[in-house]
Length: 113
Length: 111
Image (cartoon, rainbow over all chains, first blue to last red; front, side):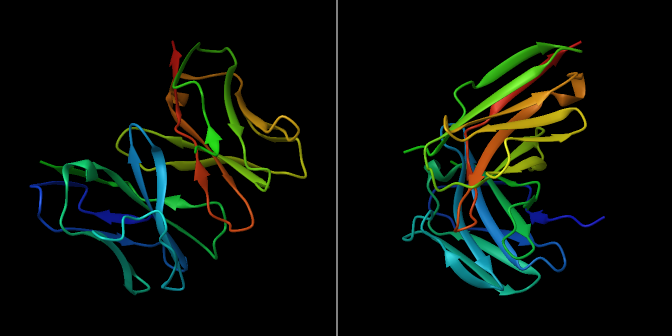
C-alpha cells in the first residue's frame, strides 16, 4: 500500500523557533510538491522538485522558508524563524514525472504561538 | 488573484439526491482539470479529471462537466451518500503542469 508519509503530524512551537517538516515520497515518484492549506487561502503551492532538483519555489517566502531533497526518499521543508502567521497545515504531494494526479500525504499541522 | 474559484464554501444535500459542486477559472491556458476530495485529518485524494478536449468525463457516481467558453466546470455526484461528506477541491493545470487549487467546498450529505 504505497503512501506518502509526512512527519511530524502535529507540531506546536513558539515564535522564532526552527521547524522542520519531512516527507517520504511514494517509491518511484520523482516529483515532490509542498502545499500549505489555510482557511483563507485554501491550498497554495509553495515549491516543487523534479528528480530532486527545485523547479519552482516562487510560492515560498524566501527569507524564512527553505525546501530541499537530500535524497530520493526524503524531502524537507524548513521554517526559520517561525512566525504565528505560518500556522497552517502543510501537505507534501508526490507524482510520477509531474503528472497531475498527485498523491498527498496526511499533512503536518503546525501551530506557532 | 485567484485563478481557480469555488464560490460556495459549503453545500448540504439530502442522501440519494444529486450534489453539484461548481468551479470557475480565469486562466485560459489551463487545459487539464481535476477534483480532489478531502476528509478531516487526511490529505486530499484524487477523484476525477478532465482534459480540455472533452466536455464530460464519468466515473461511477461522479461526473465532471467542462464548459470552456464559460470557463466553468462542475462535479455531479449521483446519488449522494453520507460517505461523500468531505471538502471538495477543484484544481487546474496548464503547460507548467502545476496544480492551482480552489479554496474548496464542504459537502454535507444528510441521511
